[in-house]
Amino acid sequence: MNLRLAIVLGVLGLARPVLSIAGAYDSGPLAKPVGPLVITALIAVVWVVVAVVRRVPNPVVTLAVAGLAYGVAAILLNWSLQPFLASAETIPLPGYAGILVFNTLQGAVLGGLAWLVRRAMPGRARGPASGGARAKG
Image (cartoon, rainbow, N blue to C red; front, side):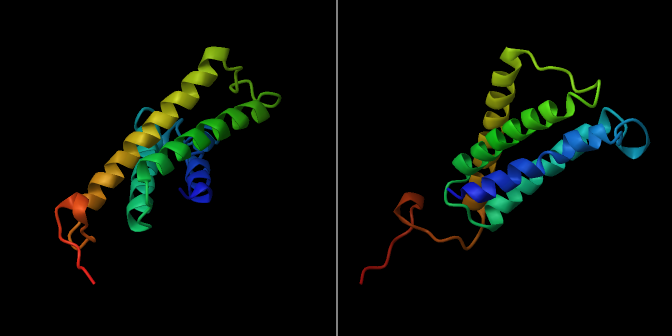
């Protein structure tokens, strides 16, 4: 697993809350509820595309760790903004676990999707697990 890639993808996910803090979802083309959904979908697509294009050996684990990294980064962002923004409310203790578990599972699901896309791609290397024959020699 590429830990650096997982962390970078997790931090990339902070685009959604940062846009919220900046007020991008208050009006215009990204107004709620459309904006957060579109940005979340774009981040998910980027995660899957990166895992497929980079041929991540275990995309399920890598993107699960990316989801965990996003959860940790989002919690740290919330903590760092609490002294400055009234909207950065304190997260109840069970909320921390929920954030970490949900985002880790979301990353794992996206990793499963990346794995399926890679399997379905033509021209991928075939081995015994995929029904192809391996050359002896």
